[in-house]
Length: 434
Image 1 (tube, rainbow, N blue to C red):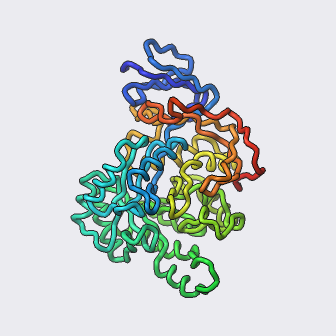
Image 2 (cartoon, helix red, strand yellow):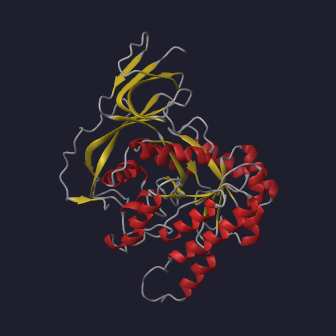
Image 3 (cartoon, one colour):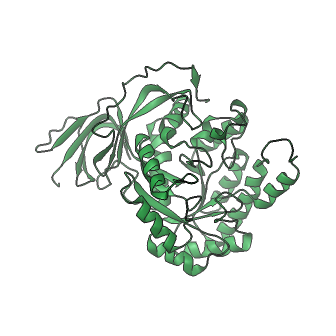
């Protein structure tokens, strides 16, 4: 066994075999060994005992935007990275747009790589597929290091990532399958959205509707193409719970399709939030309470659920800015439904790492990167009223106490001090809906 630099002990370490008391030995940024909780380790430079606080693998956040409109790209990476480590997110997989430039070619990818240098989290990238993309473009992006690809059937990205039609979707899927890469798809159908917009009264001051049937029609197209090409396809974000049966049926016949959702779709029914607040604007929009309950049912389905990953859906300046509260919001709702830390880790770490091909992330196991999170499952905290995200003023259960990337503490920084174990703020008695 290599020389152990750091030992982290917890009575609740979430391992692939379940939750157990253990000591995690770290060497050169990787987990060297899982030991008995009270094991003696000689010559370790650092020893940390978390007690009852849980030790989890760091979250791998898929389909993240980092840049607000008008913000320098480097600043976007710095701000998103700082928010991520406070939230227990140790890896982000960056969506190709609305960041500028959109990641549709190697030159843009290199610009993002340069801007992300020095980020506190691990950063991976998705290459964007547009009507202008050629097979050579996709091959060059894959060769330059993208973890996978992303496309939209409507306006889910940005003007640079315009919608792909059905022939192009199939052609791109075939190219992506040949590279053995995953494809993330924003599946709202452009034709259905256009039809909904035409039937909407332009003078009533409300945004055009984005009905669940747009997701259904888009999913039908995606499943049809994936069945022919064999492409590993991940629908992101998935919100229309009525379509879960469609995904399940496709998987039952061997189509490699799965789905990704976000805590705000699981926690915030549309009836309970102000329609005119930009803090709740996202694409697809928040759905009804009935849809939220059905989405939970799909996520918690016995056996092989098609909804396999959960991430922040972070879109600073253009949608929900929610990355700082991903774990507490999800844990608040999931624990009330009787779910445990194994579920939390599967949704936010193990599953996303598998989708993104991050072989050595997403598990607390020997040989894996020491990207770790200390999480107090019982601590309550009130989200400040000034927070720009959708949880402002709400009381959440669960708090990230410490985050490590490659065995190095990135939150809190040495000059910071963790908050008290219990929330001492006042504030309204509001809770995330469950």
